[in-house]
Length: 280
Length: 280
Ligand SMILES: Nc1ncnc2c1ncn2[C@@H]1O[C@H](COP(=O)(O)OP(=O)(O)O)[C@@H](O)[C@H]1O
Ligand SMILES: [Mg+2]
Image (tube, rainbow over the protein chains, first blue to last red):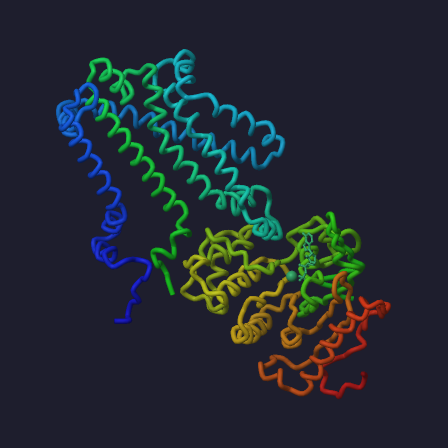
């Protein structure tokens, strides 16, 4: 019996689910949220059926499902366009954000000059910026990418700067006592210390990146979920707009989860004890 | 004459601030090459501060701090320094932490790794080379920090209370173990502790510091034959010598009561020889 001490932190049903592996555990963890969501959708259906709401005001979930089956074949191209913009924009935000964070952290003057500008830049809404960018760089991929990057780089800069500042000063002193250069300090202590902060910022950026791309597409685009919404709206297909909303939500969650998994891969030491790797 | 491994003369330092802290008030110390020298003093007297000056991390207000004739002021990297906290880098596995100093000192990655692997058994870390620091026990973390310090290619080791956080039993084991390691390595060691028994067991020379602002209160030469077994602590000669060391530690408290500081009892006490104490 005592060969393996039962974990007291997990309830019994959770351990049952864990027989099905990591995903079984995850399913159990999110089961309450899924149940609530299903209940809300059920109430919605009931509400629409009982009050006999006009479909161009509020369609029933069943009508939305039908719209998905009906027009679903149009979606892959739009999804691909929006996802490409979101992912490339996110990469640009990450690269620019990290570079800026390193500059701000290592040069006090840069901090005083750049930080206020960066904060001010966040007061300009993406919806205002998007049309300007269309004028300046055209309606292609670039303008969308820039909107996504501008929305995403702020949380990345802020949390990476905080991460760099959170580095243990004694650890910096230790490597300095070993004769380390500034580059060595950055490489061995400062950058690894900033990894959790960087990913926290990247998660926020990922959650907003799809919305950023959609907003940019509203202004002008050939393809993408934003333009799909505009067209649906023009033909009073509210059910299709709801389909798009659902797809945007799933896409955002997928990106968020991808970043979360990336963070685990990039900071294995944070999860070492969880897996019991090399334990005892 | 052989050049001293460490020479400190008239070292003074005050930490500035609203309420300046006068820490070092003219400290002198000398260590011969290959000697094991301990530094004993009450908590907060400035032992760590002194090691930081030798590690090149702190610029003193006045005085000389030389390692093999070179000034350490503003020049880190002349000694292998082990701070009071183990400061293992959480993002490096045990082996990665072990080779950190060697790597920064320019020893090739592969060569450093080989050296570390060869020493793993001696440091009681066999089989744990790919464990994360958070998976190691307190004693193992301490030995790993020591291994990292040993692998820094310098003639002088600066060890700041390396066993301070360990329980009494582990500490006794570590004393035996450190003697063995040091016997085959034969580098100069400057060992900080507030434990007089530990200092007597391990050292060739023990310096006793006064409370803050610190000076040297006494210097003892310890010439028990080596290796020194744990049972030595019950030897009447050892007990008597320990009493003299404690007396030297307590004496300067009178200074704070207004009695002028006596000159340090330099070499006047030759403790721990077989001959009965002819002084005192
Ligand atoms: N960076 C610092 N700024 C101000 N005071 C300090 C600083 N570092 C140490 N001190 C003070 O200097 C004194 C000596 O500290 P330390 O050398 O760490 O003592 P020890 O190692 O002997 O216990 C203590 O009173 C401590 O509070
Ligand atoms: Mg100390």
